[in-house]
Every structure is written in structure tokens, then in C-alpha cells.
Amino acid sequence: MAALLGYFLSSQSAAVYQAEGLVLLTDPRAGTTSASELSLFWNPTRYLRNQAEVMQSPIVLNRAAEILGSSYTAEDLADIVDVNAENDVDALTVSATDGDAQAPVDIVNAVVQAYGEVVSEEVQRNAVDTASGLEASKALLQERLGELDALIAENPDDTALEAERQSTKEALIDVDTRIKDIGTQALLYGTGIQLYIDPQPPADQIAPRPARNAAIAFVLAALAAGAYAWWRAEQDQRAETKDVPD
Image (cartoon, rainbow, N blue to C red; front, side):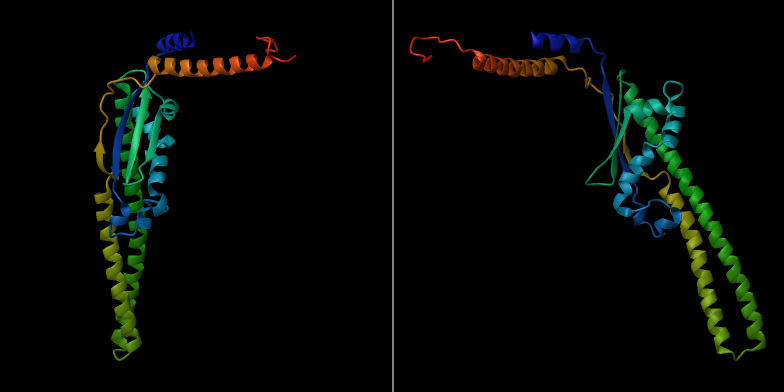
């Protein structure tokens, strides 16, 4: 009876489907520019977990809701989207559940697209800010180099001025290189997504599963019945044969 009841109740529940996509991320540590300059990650050992949190953040889910249209809000997506970091590779597994078989696929695609857009905008913004700071340093170095040229013209035998002039020129070259490198790395990093394996429409629902639930109900009911029978036997004080002592 428990098995039949479990099967019946499960079969009456709404169907739930799940789709799953894999996002292979670009490792910012592989670039020549210091990753801290572009603020791409806080701690290398927690890079994937940080990006998983970014993908589930309100700013990304709001963007994903805009991509999907009026069907979902960011709060809806927060309840049905899950992002997990893989252990062996720099990849995130993005999954979504919904009552329609195609909907989870659209949701995963929208979340990944929104994540790429948000990351790209952030990288470009950080690159511009960093380059602006370097441009200010470059202007100061150029100003100092002009002052040194004037001083050396007046004191051509001053070796200290010549040494400072040389170090200033080297610092100016280094700043120029960093400015160019930051722009290049920002373009190369792009959305931060190296490869995206998009989800396929699920063939089967993940819930409900009437047969499985009926089997679980059967096992639980059998255990309960056995425990009750054992308890009842312990409470029975009747003598079933004449050989049982009083």
C-alpha cells in the first residue's frame, strides 16, 4: 500500500527538467600583465570559487533576466540556477531546472552570456582606470626627464644627474610597456570564457520519479512494519505452549 501510495503521489507532481553547461575559463595568471592590475581575481587558489559566486551574483542574474525577457526575474533565477567549480580543470558547471524541457537550456545560455558581458565590462573598466594611473606616472616621468636634460645641459660633467636621467628613461620605457600590455591583455581576456559547452535539451525529467519513490516507500514501509512487529512480539506475554514457564 505504501508503494502504491508513493507511486500515485509522485505521478501527480509537476515534471522538473534540468540542463547543464560547462564553462572553461581563461586563466588570468597565464598573461604577462600582473593580474592584480586588472583586478581579475582576488586569490589564485580561490579563483574558480570566486567566479562561481560572480556568475550567481545579482548583477549577472539581473542581466540574464533581461536577456530572457519578462519570463524570469533575478530572484527566480537565483532559486533555479546552480554553479559549481570543477576540481581538475578551470571550469564551472552551470545548471538550471524548470518545468519546461527547453527552459533550462535557455536559462543556462542566458546566465553564461550575462557573465561574459559583465566580466568583459569590468575588465575593460579596470584596464582604463589602470592605464589612466600609468599615464599620470608617465607624464611625471616625462616632466622630470625634461628637467634633467636642462640640468645636464648646464652641468655636462655631473655623473649623478646622468645616472638619474638614465634611470628615469628606463622607468618611462617600463611604464609605456605596461600601458600597452594592459590594453593587450584586456582584449585577449575578453569575456573570460575560453570554451563553452552549451547544454542540450534534457531527454528525461529529473523529478518526479514515481518508480523510484515507490521503491523507497516500499522499503521504508517494510522496515517500519518489521520494527512494529518486533515491538509487538516483545509486548506479547501469552504462553503459546504448555512448556512456557509462568
